[in-house]
Image 1 (cartoon, rainbow, N blue to C red):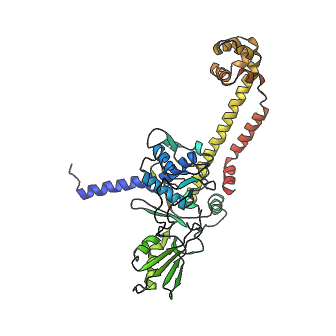
Image 2: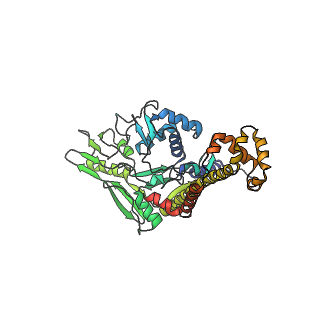
Image 3: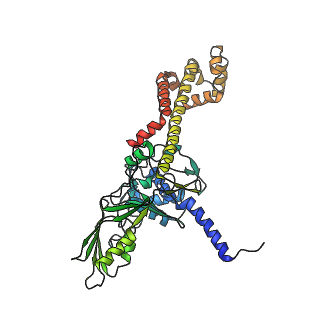
Length: 426
């Protein structure tokens, strides 16, 4: 067997690596999150749900439980999550656009604080019933995907944030943002013939051959040699870095709006037309409805409707597990109460004997032998050791309310698709 040339060998390995990286880390998962964002959210849900905690504390928890890939990568993700509204932050998290020289660099993680965002679209009601996988550390488990309401990167949360971008190995995805109700109506209820991305009033769009071409609207003042950029799409920083010696920049952007004033310095030969052309070159974004999604170490090319429907089905499955778990707990309680009803006349003797001796005693009683056949010795032992004797004697053994609750939950499960759909529309 002849050896492969080095260039062929390297090429084959790079293609293989690129395909693996895109399928496992490069693209977002079914919930619209990459690994690091999902893990940060899960950690914050566990330790920062009710109060602000230091960003350094969140980094430590995430790295030690879920994401062993350095504090720098985790903090970078946290900063982006604060900027786009995924989590709440207080303190210096740097400039939204990276252009403001006074806030370009975020503070060290021991200073700013973060907290769970209660208005987050990422509802965690069914998180305990998601499909679980082993963590990279191998000492615990984490959800494969969060059973979210909608794919997170498709839902617009803040005015200045108009689209999400992801870069893999030889693969780039621009995710359009939509209003949540539009996604539900178009993808799940089919009430609209088509759906258009929400790109804001400061974006101009044109559609050509199924491709949406989005550009920021620019306010041009030729007398002042000034351009005002009113929307944050594309790579504004890269555009302005090309001309940094010829321009001054004033970044007035806030989470509510984008406003970047670019002015040509006095005596510079840069023209306003060239400035506009350079800005448009780096801020014009081409968008398709086809989206790359990573699942089970494979890369899928999905339409918007397919993606939303698959996540909806996953949430329905997790919701069914949630309600079935409630039924199991109620049935166990009903079973325990039925057992208490049977053994109550003999409970006072349990205080005088060992548990095993008490079980032998009641098993020998002809009056209740038949009723006890459906209960194991372990079940009886668990009841007696879990509850105090006085509690067992005075315990309310009426199970009608519990049985009615079980029937009510079974009705929910029978109608679970509509229940979850109502949650999305609320």
